[in-house]
Image 1 (tube, rainbow over the protein chains, first blue to last red):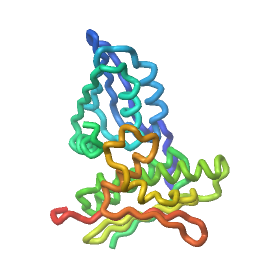
Image 2: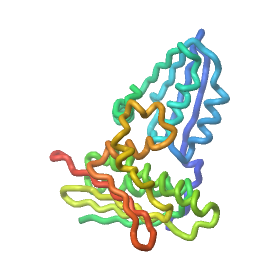
Image 3: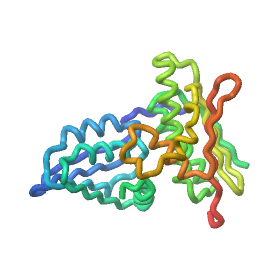
Length: 103
Length: 143
């Protein structure tokens, strides 16, 4: 049997920065079950009130249903009336967003 | 018929290893829609790990068994665990849901996605209490 891989093999990073009255969140790597607890924590720490949110998934390589759960929960936490724009580059991930009607 | 069989402990870090082996298998058999199958199989593994951890906590005596078969027409993935299976009426519940509900759900997103990404999705219990999940994806004509 192969040597067990540690959770750290799932590389995912969250970066946040304010651009005027908008908050830009970048999620890079794999947004998967194995790392989702860590990502939720990082997003919670980075989240702040803003007029709008830009979720940049350009460097997202993989996502699963728990990753979609993270995005849904993020959207639910936003201030009423604020806007969230999601940028997706990967064609397959974009298809998944279409299927789930989150596009 | 190409066949791959694997076993894994019901722990999160093992999902990564099986995902990787599954991806290698699907690519090696030239299955064009491998990403759909990989996504669905990954969701089944999450369910199995969660179900077995919930049932046995730290002292699970069972492994999860994975079998992938590829023929010229289909790919079939079977996952066997001892987590108890899906609740009665799961199929009807799944069919009642639409993706309009996806945003509001607290759980079940994975099952909805498996259902839409595969051509067949079944779950049954064997006489010894094992839950067997089976997904089938037909090969596209050009795949």
